[in-house]
Length: 112
Length: 117
Image: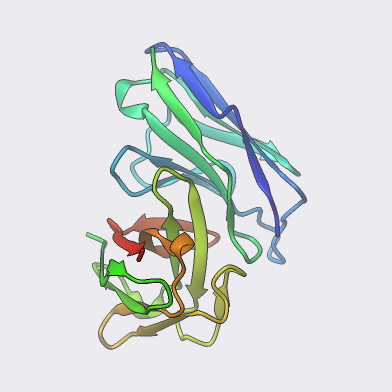
């Protein structure tokens, strides 16, 4: 099983500033089709998760360009530029290359 | 509009059974692989099971293998999760999610399963 480790556990950000969340995997997970199926999800309190980014850096439909992803190998980063109040909640990374699909433990983002 | 609606959750005693359903609409259900993901109260996300569009491929987390069975009825646009021999640690919200390559692009609102005596 590929273990996904997120840091930090929590983050307090000033409105309009940037935030970065790190996700590290216990091993590489390149699919046989050559893709790295690393995605980022956001979950607001009382809501289901919603997809932000997939294949490391591809934004899902309707996701603002304030959200960006980067990384390679076993280290990945989600960056939120110009943080807005609606960005509060918990962010998860997930690898969907190999079963079992595995999630990071989550990073809670709060606004200062 | 893509919609996923779970149902079937509830309170059950340890050792009991439940069958969850997830009704899909607004997309080509019969061409979409699907997954179940759960979340214990106040905890993170845990992938539970996945099924291919044609039901030929089924995968399970070690924690549920042998107790849970995923299935689907493409004629009814419905995904199922049969849960047997339930344990206290199976308590949580169960979400169905549509697979999008290696991601999960749409999620239902979830159904709460509580296993307690």
